[in-house]
Image (cartoon, helix red, strand yellow):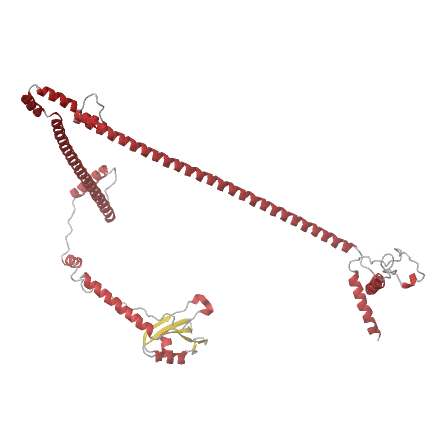
Length: 503
């Protein structure tokens, strides 16, 4: 069943994907009509637009009146054919819709930005429709109407019993009646269900813990049995090895002593046996002769018992364990030393970073102080300039304005000054022209400069005497008077205008 459902879902998805591909390939057929009157209704719109070609979808959206003058209604239509779209656009693009108040609204027909259409969801039929007669509660209601129950009459004894039961309940519940409403019953049931669920969860936890402990005990028992079997195998192997060693020792002893062979020789030779024994003793290794290390170890192994051997093995194991523990402790100490060194390095780096940050903060503070001092100096300079400007303005206000005669005198003096400056410039140019000619001819004065001086005429040097120019003979400099130049310019303009008036 699950496979059939999955296959059916896959086929439906494939069909939907094919439909989407086809729709993408087809030209757009959904249209929007914008800028319609806000008071227009869908019925009036269809009447004005009718006959509307075959269409699959129509939707009319009302305007948002909070937009004020920009509130328009719009309509969406999806046609069946692309040709109908073109015809509809030719007719109604720019078509003027008139409002009830006489306002005109030219419509705009465009392709909709979203060409899809909402799917029509089929409503599921109500399964309980027309089944009230089969309902048990409805049937009980009808039975109660047909056969009304007779109310039992209560006697005084019944009332007294009820009162006594209520008093008992009050005494049991500390003077409060035991109320039972549907809500309280529901809450009690919920509480009991919660308790039962908590008990179930606890029982499950206990069961799981018991299973875990049982599994652990079984695993421990298995490990113990395995260890016991290994120990027994090792003991059996050791016993076998000991039996083999004993057999080998017995063989070696027989070969060395060989008492039977000695007895036979004694019986045969008699007295000569003593001499043979002496010869054998001489041939056999004497006690006084130095023995090798291997022979000494063999003798020790022969004299040793099993207990001694086990003792030696246990000692060797203890030595190995001690050596291993020492190596581990050394490794741990080295690792701890490395960790300590790493921590020290980190602490040092952290301290260095702190010092760097402090230095940077100091530099920043110094820069801030410098900027603040600069700003203070600039503010002081600005204040000084403002004070100077204010003083100048006050002085200007104090100085009285010059009269017309003073202005004319000032203008004349400036004109004379300009003439003298022009003359001095001409003389300098002449001197510069003559200087290269004199250098070529060799006619030079004592100082290499001509006799003429700036600001002195030729008439003063006719006799060849050099006269010093006195301060009183020098041109006077015009005293600065604020507003004098403007007054002079105005005077010139007035002088230039006066002859026109005389004409």
